[in-house]
Length: 254
Image (cartoon, rainbow, N blue to C red; front, top):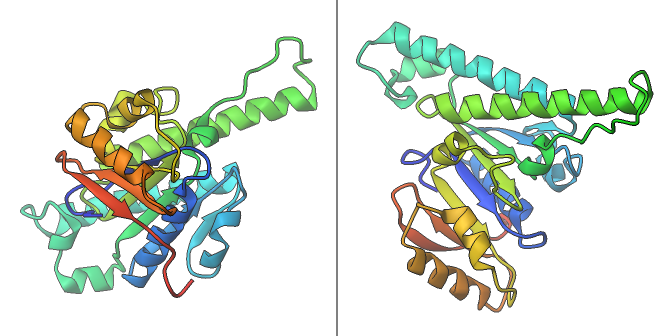
């Protein structure tokens, strides 16, 4: 992924197509390249990120996810202040002097969020529940946390583009319940993972790549990936509309 050209990425695909595997591979690659990594997985309690233990910040539940994202937002603010303070001509973090980067401990950060839509979708509140019951209060608490995660994520997608903070978000369905138009616009790179021999519906392709590239080229690339004989094939559409076949596997050191 060219994070300088497009810092944020959406990975979508059906269950079992390898989204979590790709997230883990990207996280391991980022660590190998000097990034700080934050992995958020409240659905599977970060079971897919056990290999990152001791190497990355891992959030297994909603409360930890809010704390981790809040810390990243604060770091974004600190970096903006560094850009403002050190030179009016500096507009990106990599343009700061090496001495400042070292003294201020500024490194690129990768934030990966697995199963984002499930993480931020609120639970319906049953009208029949006693408003003082434990179940009712748990639903309210979940929904408040889900909303906080969504708002913090949206803020990072909007504002972190030039300060070295990159988000990679996975979901099964990139619909507008979890992703509004602004979030879609800020997720420049879009990747669709596929399962060998399992066709992808035109609706899913349109939902994932709408307006980002030539429709025929995307459909042909997805069909080629589906026809591959093994797992680990995907299609990447970049922010500038380039359609690229993609193959991924676990890093050798995992």
